[in-house]
Length: 179
Length: 437
Image (cartoon, rainbow over all chains, first blue to last red; front, side):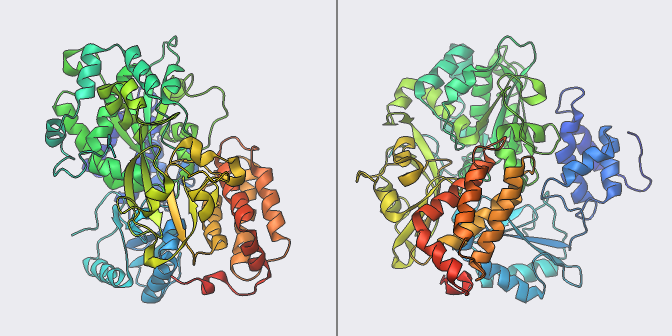
């Protein structure tokens, strides 16, 4: 596939990473780079994977666009629609529920005046609930960007939201939201 | 209690190569590469009695011995760091705090298996741990423990970390391999098993993080010594992830054989139930294993004290027993709604079903829907029997064990807590409003 779509292109720095990732796999097995490349693409192109971005990734790996779509739609970390600047993902499975995840979600909903799955009108926050993030001993918790925020209380939550609002930083699984 | 994996976990800087090495790290690589043959390493793992720590408990040495040595294709070792079983967070702790232990285990194990390229497949949400591992790998390359001609021998190894992207199913080893090949995580039909046709249709061994880490002390101390720890076929130590309504949630390394009661109530471990409450139930080995009421987790149906071993936890089968599983130990206090907790599990499995087999794809959805209405005051009298029936019809009828994993908790919860389900079916009040936190 070599349907490179016009305006979408990784930076030189990202392209260096792309080459390094592809070089890990045996010859002819470059498709193995698809998941890492989609993470990189999502991080570089506004936090979601548009059809154009997916076509571009297909062209880099010399595979058909459908091979990218079927993968991107399977894994829950890939956003196929735009998300807010700051994607808040609250764990809701057993241990987190046992220690107050429902109350935490309700608190965030009230605070941001949105429901789970929605984005604030200023495009600042999207709230999602997710399945077990492997942080059961420090429940309740959430993920934002590359970081886990653990042992949360409503007070801690308020502080985080204010901090993220003030920083205006876009969340990406590849980047820390700390500091 | 003897610690083999977490012995040095509190030493400042143990995440760096320098400190890890100073504490005796990488000695298993030296011992294996310089004084042992690959088969001799496998032999020690066999003698140790080490069982897969991801959940299934299959003997690790035996799994290694299945690898196709006649094949001319390259062999691969793939570490399963896709830790996603609700209640389980031990691998994350190990990789975050002492990443070189996993890397050392990968090198020694790759030597035993004859793998020249190995991968650690880590769940995408653990991206910050992927960075920790990559840094540790760079240090290991710089010190000559990875790359060409390790320690001047003719053994060479490249090691890479591959992220997933949010899919519990990729913890199933063939789904993991599909994902590593850049595809959807749909489990493969077996046979052939990965030992014959795994990654890129080459002979492959997939082992859990903790299993690979355990190879380090096994090679250092010898398989026979390792096997002296524990009871019967439950040898060595095990990392337990303790969570829920306890005073001290966290990851604990125990010698297999520790009484369950001591684990829950001793200050050294869980420190008892929070808020001075009573214990109602425990899910002992991750969300997939049967839940047990307090009296059955502490004592078997025969009245013997229950021990933290594969055998003791399984005593009584699925009627009065459970499984050690991944060691994801979730404790629930007396205020917990078992129905509501089960709903979080059912929702989880429905979300995580890959959709390949209809009993699982449809059945998990039905179970979630029925449990939702039971939780929100719209239950019907027949719901309990329908749930039980769906669980029975999923079990054993799918390509991979996710179907079983979704069915077992439902059947067990109804078996042990039927009156609660009956109450929910007749009540018109949402359960959430009755539960105090």
